[in-house]
Length: 363
Ligand SMILES: Cc1cc2nc3c(=O)[nH]c(=O)nc-3n(C[C@H](O)[C@H](O)[C@H](O)COP(=O)(O)OP(=O)(O)OC[C@H]3O[C@@H](n4cnc5c(N)ncnc54)[C@H](O)[C@@H]3O)c2cc1C
Image (cartoon, rainbow, N blue to C red; front, side, top):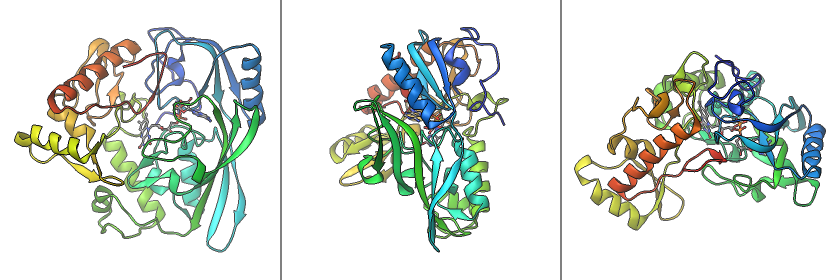
């Protein structure tokens, strides 16, 4: 399994060794005007302030697993977040609260909490990237979201030039979103998670995971079993980074699952009448969440569907767009994403939105 997060990805890139492609799981992205590495919260703030003093744009880059960077690269300072570690800041007989440095590798943290018998992150095993990026899009998988365990985020507020603590209730957590996503204002320095002291997982909510564990939805299982099963399920879908598996050279899901008002949902059902019932989940209020993978597949883009320059839909998961040649340009990936988005819209009148943050490129 590769650690593209801690070290630059190795390989031959279309744009040469200076390219930001080395720091992204898609292996895409042109050069940065300036690249700085920050290994502590103080250094992160310092590097950002220095770039601001030079009147340069700033891009915060951690694991590079949720960004699509354009072929032109970034015309400013890229600050690579490489602060590490976590500490217990509060505990009682039932819970423990840990403060995690932004650059801590997420899956290392999850593994460490499971070893210690702390419950709450186990279903998020195998998600690439850093702890500090998890609040950005409220990372979620297999029925858990970080919004359930985050109590506060410490961030550098670039608007006011000060370090602030933002309580979870003020983070605006939503499905794959928060106040931090698409905003340059906050640089996350550390994140506090409150976890239960328990050898058992939180109740399993995701039907596929329950089936794989041989339990009912709502049951709890030993933490290590939850982790092992999630990792196995994810690996089968190319959702665990693997340097030898081009199906994982992606940003995970490229599109979010569309959330439709009731009227739009009924329109979709009409348009899809010949295809059976579109898979859906009830959303908050009178909205319905639809499977983006189903829409893409039914619009004619199956697993492995090729695009230009050797980009392709993953052969293991319809939602992942991959740079499987390892030498493509961002423009090629974007071309494939556009083709899919437009075809889904033509067929179902539903607009797909990208899940990753697009930098100096757009679909
Ligand atoms: C194979 C694969 C599977 C994935 N599976 C999932 C999944 O199951 N669920 C899920 O939710 N996501 C998933 N993802 C997406 C991704 O792993 C997560 O979104 C992750 O949290 C991104 O972390 P990162 O450190 O790589 O962020 P980056 O890609 O470096 O950055 C993403 C965005 O956050 C910003 N950012 C990063 N760090 C900070 C910081 N400290 N302060 C302020 N802004 C910051 C960046 O500027 C950028 O806008 C997957 C990705 C891949 C490649």
